[in-house]
Amino acid sequence: MKGLIIIKEERCRWLRELVPVYHPAMITLCNKPLLEYLLEFAILCGADKVRFVFDSPDDRIEDYFDTGSRWGIDISYSSTRENDQLEDILKKNSSFRGEDPLLILDGFFFIRFDKGGDYGALFLPGGGGAELCCEGGEIRFQGESGPPAIIKGGGLDLSIHPIMEIGDIFSHSMDILSRDAHRYILPGYNNEEGVYIGRNVTLPKSVKITRPILLGNNVQLGKNCEIGPGAVIGNNVIVDGGSRIENSIILDNTYIGGDLTIKEKIVHSNMAISVETGNAFKFVDQHLLSGISNATGCHPLKILLHWCMALFFYVVGVVPATVMQFLLKNGGNWQEEEKSILLADGTPFTVKICRIRRASLGARIASGLALDKVVLLPGVLSGKLDLVGNKPIVATSEGKIFFDDFAGYLPGVFSFSEAENIVEGNFQEEITERFFTANRSLVMDIKVIFKTLINRWQLQEKDYADT
Amino acid sequence: MQYSEQHVGNVLVVGLDGRLDVEAEDGLLSAFDGWMKDKPDIVMDCTHLEFIDSSGLGILLRLLKRAMGNDRDVRFANINEQVRMLFEITRADQIFQVFATTDDAIHSFA
Picture 1 (cartoon, rainbow over the protein chains, first blue to last red):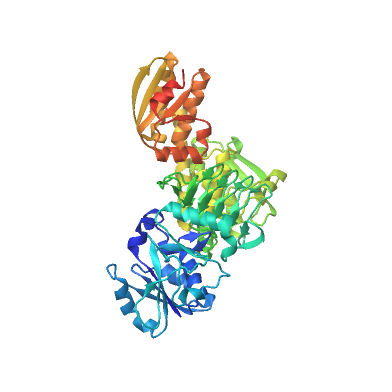
Picture 2 (picture 1 turned 90 degrees about the horizontal axis):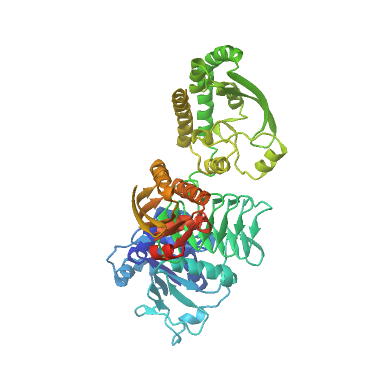
């Protein structure tokens, strides 16, 4: 048997507007694309060659399913026009079908099936039961001869459900998680009922988990988070400390700020969608909800560029910094302190931290040019520090606890919280630093450097105004 | 941001109109000090409050703190979905008293 899965834009356009980065067919139910559920059903029915037909093709679908070898079948792709009827689609794909019987899943719907079920009876002549159709589409079967007809359920434990609004995505996900997990192959390890955990998940001891939950790959949970019941967290998600996620879906590549409560929402990037009302809002506060653009953040080009910039700053700044240090030290406007900080691998490293008291014109210029940073630049050149990174954590016992809970920490000469003028020691500083780790990019790094320098000059003006 | 004022007994109903963000801070805080001279309880009518961000939320917290310092309270009415979602997600709904209508908020002071 062959399978034809047809999803037309008119049936799912509403979802594209809410979650634009996903092709609607790739929207995830429990971290698994909707299309994969349909594919698995077609395979269970006996299809060994499946063709996806869309009127809005998307490379990401092809990237994910590829040739189908992961499922042990052949997958091919075809496009159709918006106005094409089923008849037209079948004509266009007649060479794919050949003389074989054809299973047709036409529409935007979810099929509740069981991975252990035997659905061979569906295709026997004279089958009874309810027709497998709904507002969102229908399942048809075309035998070796005759037109395609809607299949009847034949008393099997099988049903088809339309996906017409965001609440449908939510309710199907929650049903799978809480009731039907045994029916499907879900991503993640499952040692305990109702708990699915993906690869590379950071889960501090203080996190409170209430079943059922499903965590994707590369999920980082901050300390004292409360997750569940009914939490589906996608891949590459960071949830900062103290946040609660209950009866909600966090889609891939999302950052959730600290001390927030996400209840009955679907969140993607900076968009929160209320499951109850279907209303969606984009949050402008990047420290609350935002997308994650680069979770790994360790591109060789970036490292090289940082190194070159550090070398440039060092060559240009070392003489002025030495002169200003000499001049300002006597007046007490240049202070130095040796501090042991934690490097990215957790080992302590002693650095000289300089502070300039902006009490004279020379001190203001030195501060504006960030000459106090020059002494840290050899650390960048030796590969121990990053030019732009996190504010270094001091190597104390408290700092080590903080370090243990801070995945992706990379100490830098310039930091995002300094660029954002966050008060030192303020709780916002911790949130800001984690946000930076989750979102850093080369462009952002450059912005941090320039913003820090501009801020320093603006502070000078403020100092003048204060005097 | 613009404000309208209406006294109902000892309750001052303040209509917030526009965007409540960092740019509204100075104006709203100084206006609030003016309103508090008669020490009224305050109802913020958010019917025309189009947008609020976390800075706006911070401003509202400061207003509440100032009012409580004077033994008064600030309550909210007619918040739209965006404001409600921000309140929910940041747990501000556990700090602010929110009512469906301005009348409900006014009567809550009785």
